[in-house]
Image 1 (spheres, rainbow over the protein chains, first blue to last red):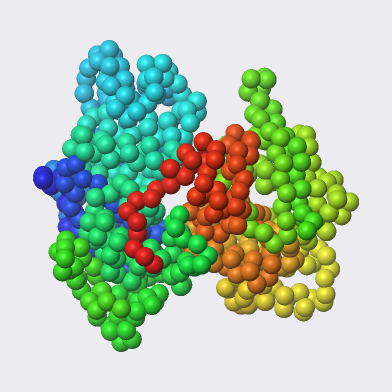
Image 2 (image 1 turned 45 degrees about the vertical axis):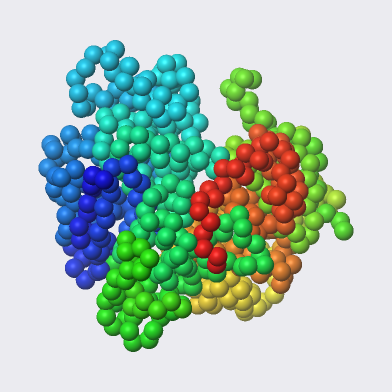
Length: 326
Length: 260
């Protein structure tokens, strides 16, 4: 499989705040063509910042303090503005959570798509129209010819998100970042969008990063998964292996606290006690130590945790102090 | 048992500019809610579930039909305070529903102050107790909402609803904005309140997994109409209406996650 994206030791820090801990620490990941990588984490875990750092879209006040991002063989870590113009849309694209906010309300679907298409290649109106209709068909948009003149507000949430995905894909990018693309949608619409993202990823040989806080969604869409807690990757591996055989206490805690259709009051949910550490105040040693039910006093706060590999599947790894299963 | 809330023939029409833009948000909704039960209202956005829950407490007026509490219409009760004493409402967004310039203690105490219940010291003690009930500390009463996380704010909203010891709390998507680990804390707290204190809950949510966990009875709404109502077990194992089946098939099942 061709490797499309690799992130090596990425660290994102707060600007002008030297005494705070980085908000993303030593993150490593790889995405190959035709593969969906899920990033799971709670708010403040750094999952969205990781996605934004690839597009060089980090908000003011945070910056990449170390590490490297390689996309399709190119180092794009701190790209110049003029290079970014060609990269964004063609090399990598993003789909945001709320299509209502991401689409310009004063432009029609046709204009939205042609804006993006024309930013990258000069072609005739007819060609662009053909291309737009083609991409709308690819994303499962019903009767695209008639809807080119619709404004976003005339479309349902699900259709708007399909337009946003069409805009992201119209220039055939190699990498697609989907940041909680179904969180603001209804469950009945969500499934269609998940299927669409999977289908396009495989068909167009895209490398997709799918960011979500919902383990059920990740289980449905992702081939492999990264679990983030307080800026650190704490567990990673093939989705099936991580979710059915979770090793890190945080991953176990997440699974035990998420209700499923099989949960009932007879088997109460087990919430993780406590709260996430505030941004920039990740404790030294293990990030999860304050909430960990399996904490070993004197070990977990003293030294940095180490990576362990699952004996059945070497690609399933987790960051902890003890390998022993409890 | 006498129902605590009784909705009959409730119709809600939102007027648009011109008749074709009118929205029938609720179309002939009939519903009985009994004390102490946990009832879920599910449906997609626009199905009318939030409108219904707002009409149930009287903060939205029905176009036709009525909601009765204790023999009186909730829209025109003679004693507002009595209604609020029995039925409380918690909103989805804890960031918007707490007054930022009031300490948490003041916000929670307000209900008692308005009713002039007990001495000032007794009120403070009740605030302290209700804060502990929802898993915060008595000291938190002196802080402002800004210093709390989303999950903690939702606990404060819950404490504010609980201080008057209501019989029913209407919860409109109160865990949707929360992280799963925090969501589970709030859900378990609601279960405890129901089982130990007998508080009834009307739980509005689009998340079938949450509703399945929490509720004894479920109402499925679609385009302003109740399309199916049944006990949770029956509804999910043996759905009758096409829309219910469609909703159930859309829940991400994924790989069955480890047996926790």
